[in-house]
Length: 457
Image (cartoon, rainbow, N blue to C red; front, top):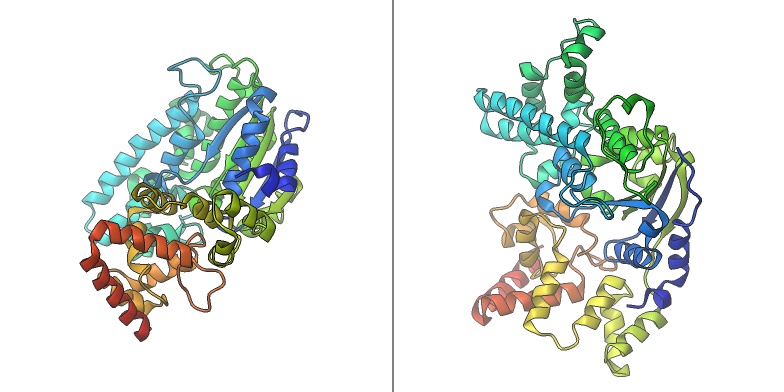
């Protein structure tokens, strides 16, 4: 897909975001929003390939939901995504995030202590499991004591099947001795004993994480802070003097990082002495993604764009370029509705090999957890997705959890349908993938079951 032809204005706009003069201490936030499959990530990747930000002095760090195994685990995202092991122009086999890595190690030891105490408790197993996942989310160390659900990623807890007993889980965590503060000691005594750091690890994890991360960035970018001069830091990387932070799949990462980013990370970058460009990609506009972008962070938001469907002329030209005939165009336009994800897949589908169907399935489900992937194919057989039809196709699964997930899964849902249903082309192609995997007899049995379930919905 030639981005210069399909989205020339958006390409120019996003490219201009990387052209500003570096100003130490300045933070520029930009937003790209639009429905799933609209082409947000593709647009940015094409701009980055063209602009080559590293040649302009940018250290580029990208956070996304590609690894579903660490979604909901704040410290895993911090350690593996925010603090990459390798950096362009950096020395091989050299860790440029020693402070962030040290924090991750100390948190791991602390987590082992907490999870050991949880395991020894007499609470029911579902409460223990919920406590473990709440702790991994990091929010229990910030806002969840005293008890509140406001700061929990309840959607993620529901996906993991641990959304029951949240109140009891928070009570359990609150009672663990390892989480208690030692506030009776004088501040200077705490500093000497290293207790202030440990207390921040327990009760102020987000701000501590942001401070340690920024300290590492200051060293990389040769922008040392006075408070870090007495700390052991590494030498800078020549040619890099500013940060490009990309937060993709903002809604998928959920509350696991939203609170960290808005209340701790961005304020820490404002206090830093290097220029930060932050590009946030998500389905919702920045003002809807988090209330802070409407209020105390609004002065940092420079520009926002929202991607819409391709114009008909662009989509038609892409279909013709892929080898379809003029006679095919009406059907293709009806199936794709001009959505870039679907247009691109239809172009790639010309020929329909077995490997294509596997690639289609992998690409469609790449952001999903294993649990969500197990729901997708059965839902493809339904003409109408309701709790009752879900019950028929997935009898062992909590229907409300599946229904709530599907309502928000814009990359699958047909936005123009009267009822909740998977988009026609995605549905048909995934069914064909399943047909090739199961064989005709089992496939036809599921077709009949889906039709019967839909009639009863």
